[in-house]
Length: 235
Ligand code: DC
Image (cartoon, rainbow, N blue to C red; front, side):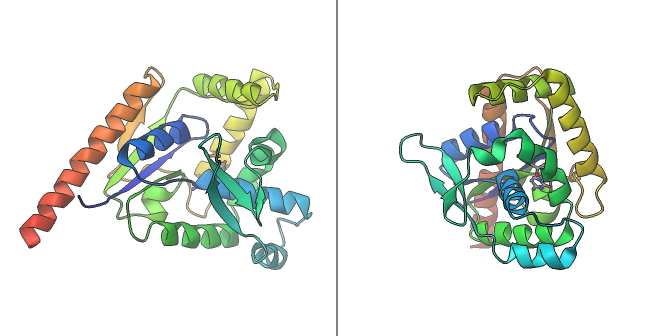
């Protein structure tokens, strides 16, 4: 069967990554969490005291940032590596979340990461989630999803996620951080978060995870069928 690109965009903590991961498993495609890539750059900038307002400094620092993903042998999850070190847990912490939107608004950062993401999807057969996948990284993606959920539900989901990792953070602080990130993500000049014209809008506030995954897999199957028919017509 032909391979397609599944691009899933949307706000922070609306269940994109969880859905994308499970969809990828069902389609037997690799999954790329582009938020993790922006988080890894942020961690590097924090650790190396890089001044975000100095383009020369950020540009030079970027040359030293190498991000990759490797499968965790026991947990089966795709872990993020920064310069050869597993940073999967560190990049999810609050101090990284507080800075990540500022770092991801820097044009040089976006250009470098978008180029790497486009290389990863060159041969298609990939599920990628983020903020600009359907609009900038793969505007030609066969399936684009724009996912959202009620802000309070998103904050509760994020709190639970942090709690499972042993980080106790109040709901108000999380809601405030999400609000701030939504604002920066949607108003930045460089590829702001917006729904692509041809994206399918999904508000999952009242949906179970199974329902979301089923819906996206069904939409992906339809697109795979369409691509197949197009290829047959060409032959
Ligand atoms: O999905 P996440 O919350 O882990 O993403 C972290 C931040 O990275 C988010 O605040 C915005 C940014 N991001 C982005 O600008 N573009 C992407 N494609 C993915 C994430």
